[in-house]
Length: 244
Image (cartoon, rainbow, N blue to C red):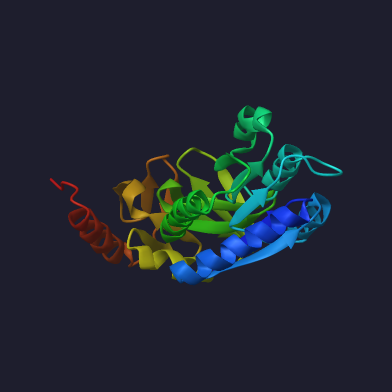
């Protein structure tokens, strides 16, 4: 299910969005759910308490705080949500890029344009879900593309997700649960109870350790080398890499 938040202090605008989303859900037979807010503060409070929205439609000119500031606060908790500004104020279009807005559209809302926008944003949401991982980290919710993950490790019940950029994300959870999600992808391997590696970023193998492209060493338990080697070779052949 795709969860959507609508935030506009104009009750007529909220009613119009509600009607458009109802029509879209019916005609596209899509699984979407939305919540309306007439003030940005209750929306922000919900997000601070852990509410998660895939898409947010925000007005710009609202009481207490404007849409840009609201979006900036949302980004402290969620870097992956698709933020769409629907407003009558064209002068904020450039500022919308500072909060990584997905789209900026002027009112009034035209049905055909709205449907095209929904088609586009839902397609991107689905593509990201298929090839990414949603993590609850110390600084909020983050969506990470699987291709960005080099390896994962667990230390004292804390997950450390090592990215190819060198960044390390800390997340709560179980490596068992994470493994069940990622091993289905076909490019991950769990060579050790405390580690999960992306096979695409293995630099070399020895009887005792895997060396990743970052030069991190992942231990291989005694007697498990051949299992790891076979899994890596199968991945390499399947993905079209050359083995000489």
